[in-house]
Image 1: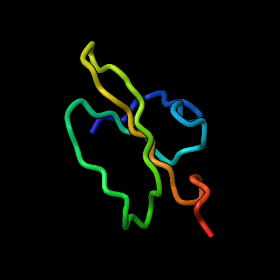
Image 2 (image 1 turned 120 degrees about the horizontal axis):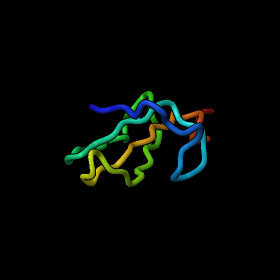
Image 3 (image 1 turned 90 degrees about the vertical axis):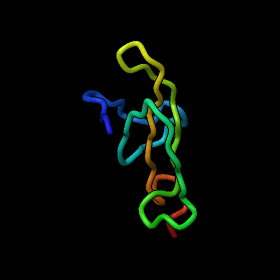
Image 4 (image 1 turned 180 degrees about the horizontal axis):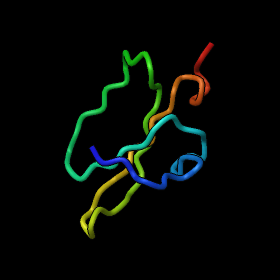
Length: 68
């Protein structure tokens, strides 16, 4: 998994704070139904060496506003 060296301060997809970001050039599965750490993942288009990719911004429950 590639992690950008200079990630943005806030999520470019929703503008909220995020916990981590990863870049993906192939397919993957995201299941957050029973995830204890992350409530939401935002996907944002990117490129990797000129090839299409997307960045995944991982939001904790508190960052997504669902931590009670």
